[in-house]
Length: 265
Image (cartoon, rainbow, N blue to C red; front, side, top):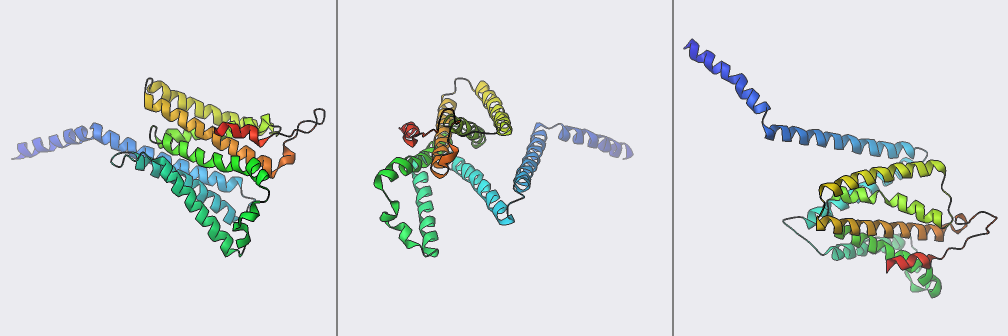
């Protein structure tokens, strides 16, 4: 009886050893470690936002954090919608619903502010000015969202987000080429962001060479980034035209928004 009990006890460490060396257990541990690392990064990001904008009111910082959260949530939900078992392939409908919701919110806001006159077509001002300055901006944003949503049907939300980090780089290059000066420290930050996105994107590309879906996803996501950047630059030109001037020796620069609008075609 004692021998049998000793034999059973000797099997316990073997069972534990087998369980600890199980691939499934290692995979579960790796998943938990990745999840904890992701949560730590999220906390650091939002902490960085709150710290960087500490001169702003708390409400403003919270709204910015909510905006960042909504962007990430939208990406993940769209990827979930386009993946099995849903396999939804009509991202244009999602974009239409998106901007219809934005329009409804804007209407509700102006009504609540008792500024219904701003909803009247006459508030657009000159039709020529509206077509020249507003229409390119208005077109670029929904096109950017359409390409971004469509890219999620070919690549993952994480990779799509990494490609999206190139938006500050392309925005800075476009704005600088049109006359806006960027401080040296700003260029350093843009360089770091661009290098990080390039390294991760190149690694993903190298691991999946010959994958047609990946190629299409890269192209669509990159197009979305360019459209997003052109929209930001055109809007910045409209709101801060004096910032887009060359040095005095060359005289003021008057870039045309229509020159960027050709990208939308």
